[in-house]
Length: 158
Image 1 (cartoon, helix red, strand yellow):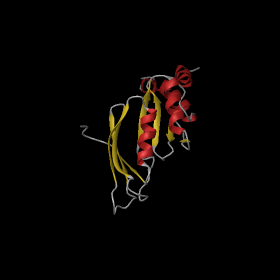
Image 2 (spheres, rainbow, N blue to C red):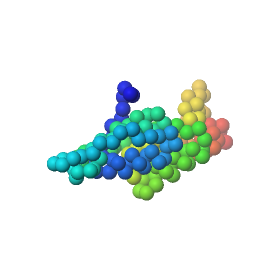
Image 3 (tube, helix red, strand yellow):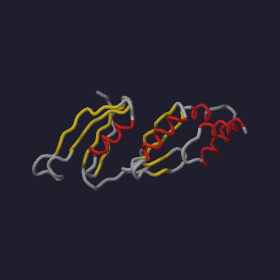
Image 4 (cartoon, rainbow, N blue to C red):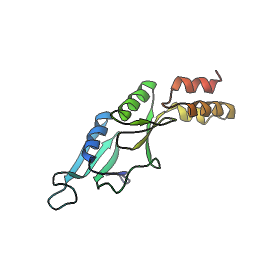
């Protein structure tokens, strides 16, 4: 059992979200589901809570009604080794109504914020040469989806 588990509040489509997220991440699985019964605030048979894992990270979802929505104050970062991986997660998470934001940020169709980040970005941004870091940061600020080749060119001063 994981000690700390992010909990995600959905209006009434948490089960759809579980299926969506587990279809994107190759190392994922649905762990548990429980459903509303008679006399509940949502129709009988609607998912009440569910747990699932993405890449070993456990999540809990709740269908709690429209009182709360997602904000950018919380986001999930997906660390990617290659541009192909960046492109894959970007296209899948923005599908069917998701929105591209800026600097590797996006919102999926449920309004949940994600950061799709090439792993090399951390290396480039932690260089001891402030000019390299500044060029990398300036390039990143102009990007929507992050481009590894573009970040490397900026870092190298090309």
